[in-house]
Length: 223
Image (cartoon, rainbow, N blue to C red):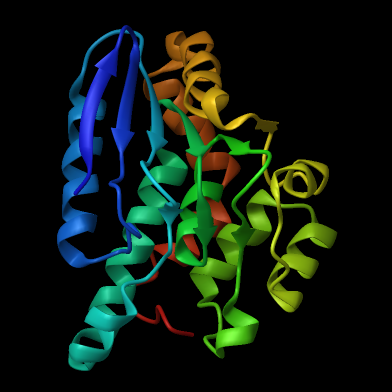
């Protein structure tokens, strides 16, 4: 389960050491950590990271198939998490040390910056291959954070981006050696920690207003 630590002005949220799928309990734990970050005073920023092979493998499909009657509420909860991260009033940096797939990739896009391991691991939106269409909210998020061409390729072809390719496509900001991923993310976050607060939150809310409105449309989350 996710755990939160603090290094100077940077909160580091470790998402876990497994596949870090979006189980309801995992989502609740991430929200609890974000509550702590938001309530803190003074300069602060957030890095999300993970331990092991995966950053996040996305939706917990096993749980979802076992709780099909909760499908809509589950999707709403995922949208709420993505919207919260996209509009969080602190600078956020995703440290992608391992595979980042599907909703995990979308979660990374909801951060302000991304640092990815250069030599191994993939960033991928596999929905076209696994026959799960993007919800309107997910589409809006992806298209708000990537260039039209990069969004088109990533969404339609399910291309697996290695670190260098992801940086070229503008999906990540930096591709670095494995042992530098988390440290680089913390360095970026630390440099921007003084911007935390209501003004930053307002800037994000206005910058991403259309995507946030679509993500928060609980009346029709599935389109």
